[in-house]
Image (cartoon, rainbow, N blue to C red; front, top):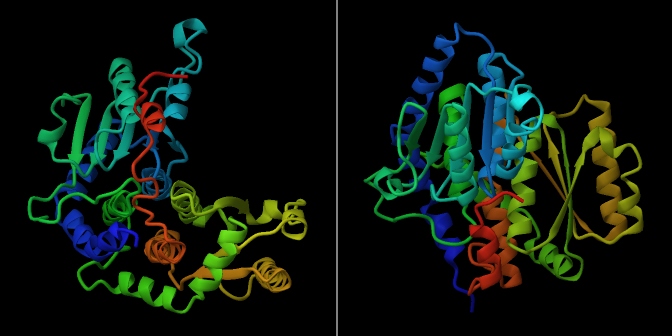
Length: 364
């Protein structure tokens, strides 16, 4: 009998999202960014967003939104070690004068204690780049890790009304969805509508219509999932890859749809796989998407694999990702439980050697 920590987390998710949205983080973050934007006389800002694990899909989502809000292509979303390499890329030439200067760096960390995010913050403060930590931790918890100043701000969505405490477990659902709520509220009209729980209820219904037992059986035999995305659905694709990989349920292969035309379909013919997920941004009328949908459906039938299309009628890409990403916690939890895996605690106890790797703060 597995300890169903993830099921408990799912039950508490609507309230955690509501309280995160109700916190002052939305207004505080937006106000700070606009102050910087005004200071630069509304010129295009160089912004870097950083996230690791479940926070990385949120960073990708935020990048898409900020690009649209500030009408600038100068926004990057990367993992912490990549951030360090980019910031220090040309240090060995002309005393680093060729290095890109950033007007703002935003690190996303649910716990606020991610070692690599802390390392990037130190580098940014040293370089004079404004750094903001977006976190679910209470500021008092971080006083020994971060010192707030003009160069470093902590924006916390911790809410003292939350009596459930932080989400438990190695793999967090809230670490992805709460930052998405905050950025979504800030930069577009899309909402997660957590007050009435509509989208989360849709996630439950979505799973009910899927043959979870068949998917789990095939994953146990061949733990490979192919995911097809386009630029606008990339945040959801990254979230799928992160959750399934970190839980140890399956290996995920990502295919950008048009790039898939260049021979990547060979893998579907020559290898076994359990599941194909098609992230469908637009509906009927687009010939390429129609042909791809037909092809994926047919080859899954031939291989006795499963085919899931995740699509919504959302007008904007941001709203599409919000609606799609609220379905994923229910999908992966259901598959995990069918396999006897609690995705929040897939390794219990957690091995010591990976702990050393996680806590390592230097570069490599």
